[in-house]
Image (cartoon, rainbow, N blue to C red; front, side, top):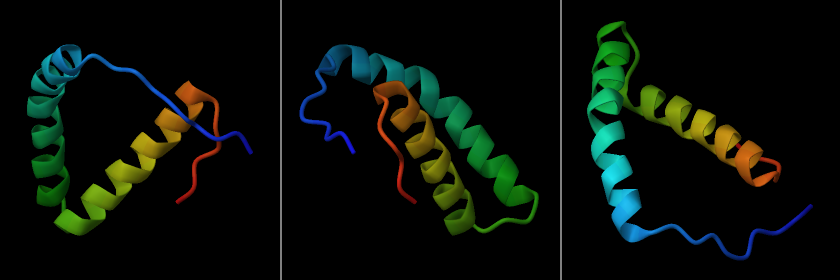
Length: 64
């Protein structure tokens, strides 16, 4: 298994990206809760999906 030692991301670009992603994420969370899932279930599911996508991008296995 490879270890990830360093990822460099501009703080400014990261902040800009968060500003773009956050409204859609909040809408997704609200809609999923409205469909009957708990906030904890939604956040865990989102976290696992993000971990899988992140692992694919950096080419390391995800663990959940």
